[in-house]
Image (cartoon, rainbow, N blue to C red; front, side):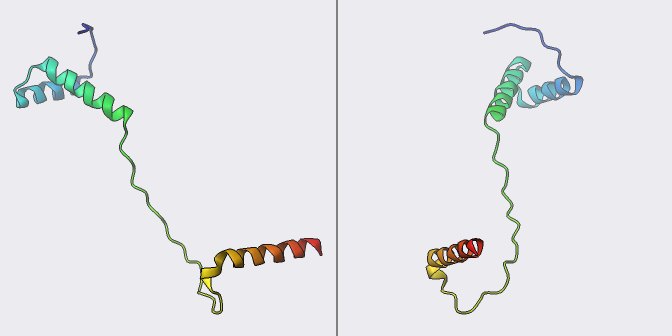
Length: 86
């Protein structure tokens, strides 16, 4: 156990006292619990929701078999290299 002196904001102190009264617990116990919870929350912040913004990629082109996507990518890369060499 460590004994220390803290200067606590008035509103925080009032909220701690109200919580202690409402819970029927000693002020010291409520302060320690609040500090424990706060430290845990600081060390393990909750994950933020991930929001994906969709974007249109255009119409589907006929005649392309997307099951062969690696072959399409390779052909496009070959074409790009051939264009650079010209």
